[in-house]
Image (cartoon, rainbow, N blue to C red; front, top):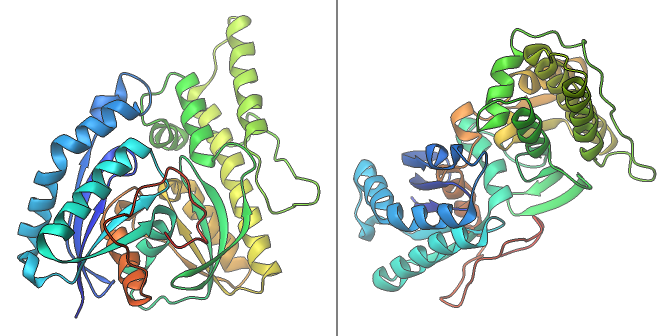
Length: 338
């Protein structure tokens, strides 16, 4: 039996969890900063870092209390080490290092994107690699071949903007509140999916890679053109049409990558994977292609510490631990050991 305390602070959620054997969540506490950043229309790194510093001790204490364990019952402390906002990451990493120094526990650095993939191990305890994973969030859009719990191979990635990023920016241009992607998904529910058209770029020489900047530019141009002509933009229809284009783009490339790499299992992960239309579209496409699809529960799509504990378990078993000289990194490839 392996008990891990996990800490996540890569962006604007301060989170702590206790996970047993990489599959069983004993506690999972998340403190969101949405209200603090809402008036700015996005995450302000300095504010995020300060709020992490203010709340992390209380969040960790709450997670330990909910799990009903003492530090003596733990085997290690897993913490998100990269990628993310460097100031935010440093709060979590330094707190985890302090805990390890005071308790003698082992420090386990965890890659943020690997954690998102691992959220599926919590939802589907029988799931094991190899499988293909679509990771879609505000900062990342990857298709990854997961060869083992700690061996990742990037098959495709975005060349510019990420899927969640363009949804947030287009939603903001439409006047929707922060977080934009969530409110776009809600607005799109009653909209017509074919009223507005958007391009779906293909990159020469890299047909599986994504490029979302053209989608974003096309959307912005249509919004600005309507404003200049003093014409109204149908928010629900625009959101539905734009969401359809983004989700179809992600789905088409994921199915193509699975077939090209002879993978039978497809996993999705990241904040964008809470999107209702994407989940529906991928479910239909995988069924049509006789592929097994694994979806994390919506509460595990966003940033949380339970997913860090799930991946941290496998990093610990692989001997991927660190000393007190470990430092956070704003960027790191998913293939790399931290």
